[in-house]
Image 1 (spheres, helix red, strand yellow):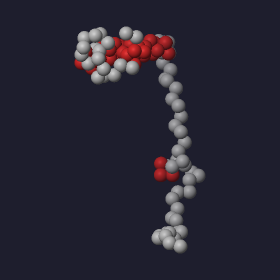
Image 2 (cartoon, rainbow, N blue to C red; image 1 turned 180 degrees about the vertical axis):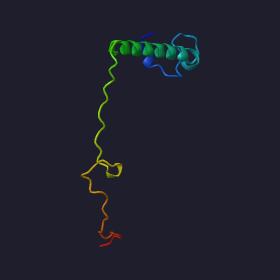
Image 3 (cartoon, helix red, strand yellow; image 1 turned 120 degrees about the vertical axis):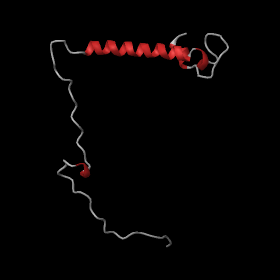
Image 4 (cartoon, rainbow, N blue to C red; image 1 turned 30 degrees about the vertical axis):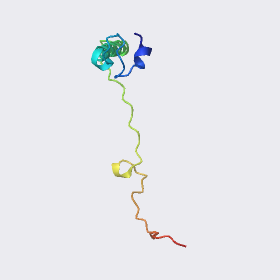
Amino acid sequence: MDAGQRKNLGRNDPCHCGSGKKYKQCHLAADEAAAREARAKAAASLEAATAAPEGSKAAAPVAPRHPTRQPWKGGNTTARGFQKVSATRKVGGGG
């Protein structure tokens, strides 16, 4: 069975092997284990391809933190802080 058919196969659908059982009771665990193995293998190959040479001990580049506009978090010198609002409260309706 290819990935396109498995993608449309629901947990409660009949299994693709023809056993008459639900997919979740028959082949779901085996198919998920195979997918997990494939993901681990792909991640390992990607990691091996992007790994630094063995002799170098360069640290991985770290992205700078995004500057915050939140005065309560500190470090922002242009923040005015919290101001008290002195406008009257509009209550009621009418006309």
